[in-house]
Image 1 (spheres, one colour):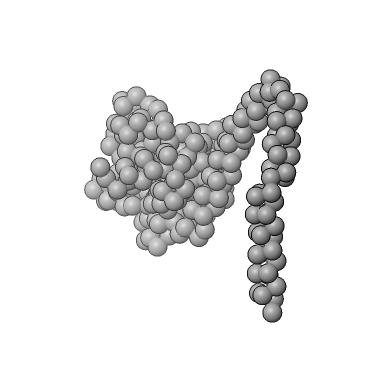
Image 2: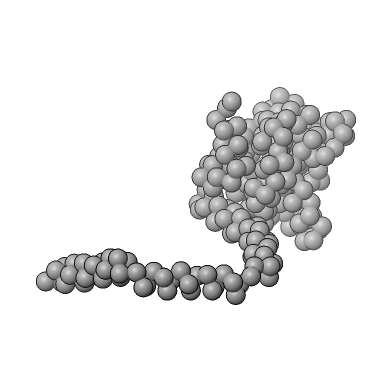
Length: 176
Length: 99
């Protein structure tokens, strides 16, 4: 039994210290994921991350341990993001209103900043698919489960997202 | 122009680390509040059960038995002496402590 399994079991038994350890362990990737989904909106990303952790705390007993805990957490965060998107319509922002993505690319190169800017122009589902499969290292199966998509659909989103990124980055490179 | 390998390398780079800055502590505090709220229906149900049970308890008979028992205790010289000794010991101890 891994260290994380022990923490999960204790947290499911309502041990606050174990839950605190899980939050500390997963807060950075989860907030990074949401920061990318919200296109650099720190306040919204943090609100959603907090709601996702609280929902996870409530439903910990339902986590069956079949997939990774991180994948399960991203699934909750994704569903929270979609609910918020329906209410707030963050995607209604125009292309010129892409928020400052420097925070998402913190400590990174120009290429990294360009990637974040290009990411911000993708559809949320493409952004989520690419982030889960690449930056967060989930398998296609895990990412499909987290986004509640059939495997083939997820792969289409990944392929389409990559192509769009390539086109956007190439266009910017030509203009530079 | 960026090739596939370069793009994959960029995409595979881990997300920038987000500093905790009290985030975890805030989540844990909120989780505690949630837990307390979750317990409210349980305590309310327990209270309702106790109240419902009290309806069926013959309170008058119970109080009569308790009163009878207490009167019996008060009338007992041994218990009166023991309580007197306890009171005196307590008073003496406090007086000594204040000196």
